[in-house]
Image (cartoon, rainbow, N blue to C red; front, side, top):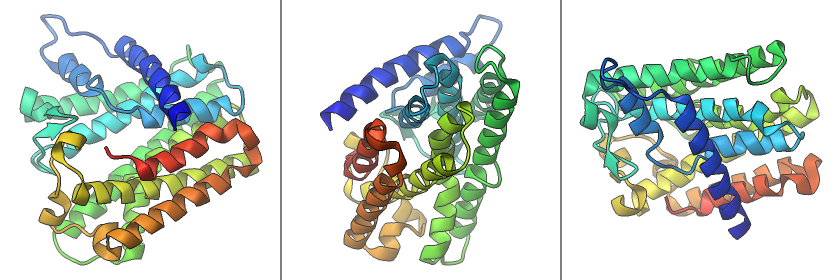
Length: 296
């Protein structure tokens, strides 16, 4: 895993530099909006989704400068989702990555606008002509990102999650559908973006989609386990909130040991999906195994 850690560290530094350049800085007349956007986005994190974009693009020798706008865009969408998820109307969290959440720092209204602005800036980046030279490719990236973020993807999964809190037990199949949207959709975009940028369709894109679907569910199971077994100091956020809210999770439905076994099997299924790419996909294979072994 040391190879993966070094690669992720280097990639995160590049993504952080790109994000720092993409998100405007506030002037006296702007108010706190840009400060809130920068506070939430540049607060750290593994930059896993951008890493997947950049490495899926590398499989097809896509130039990094063509892939970075999509990598930054998916991190902005992810950050917007966290900012809104932390709000009192949603999960009502006080801590994110070991520091006060955006609404605790800047207030609810500014946090809502910061999330909105990160989402729209993501699409501005994805569509910008100084990214990929082919406008048809940029349009497909925008379409794919919108599908992942919207009602058919992340937002729809979040709605299912909120509805379940209001009443009604979910079985395992329903939780899988929920999490394929809430968590998995952004992973699917991240893993297939490289094929879109390279104008590859068919078997190679489908293989990356299968890989994404498996690591997305594995990631969520690992998150569910960490919410039960992890610590606030390691995770940088409160733990035990899923059980307190009465949420149906993989751990709740399967028990910790069976959930752990399911995550490991999903990771190995993800590894198998990458067979068409040979050794070029070794870092992506490492990601699948890292996801189920991580402690934060």
